[in-house]
Image (tube, rainbow, N blue to C red):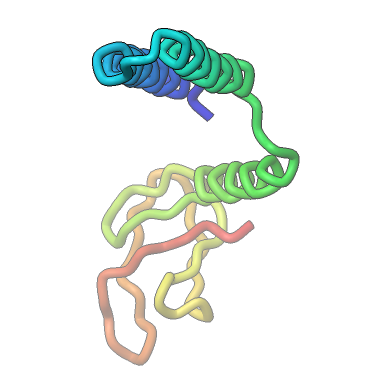
Length: 135
């Protein structure tokens, strides 16, 4: 997770908490006539907001244990996608090997670096194809 983005989000939320706290305390001071109740209510509002802010900053960058596995799986999938080499008909081959058509996996071509990819002849028709390097 992007901790810088998360830190900015926590800073903005903290600012919102502080503004809300000031507004609630000002409202209590204006609307409540009893001085004892004013003091107690104001202290409680400040404590609750302070605890919420502290907890928020303590949890910054931490993830529940259950969240780590899906993130690792997503990273694996992204890595596999990045490792998969694919190209289009007419493009020069950059990685030698055997490729198959994305629409007709049974249609395969062996390519050498620098050669241009042919059209796919699947279904006895020639068509522009996306060729995928086989693992």
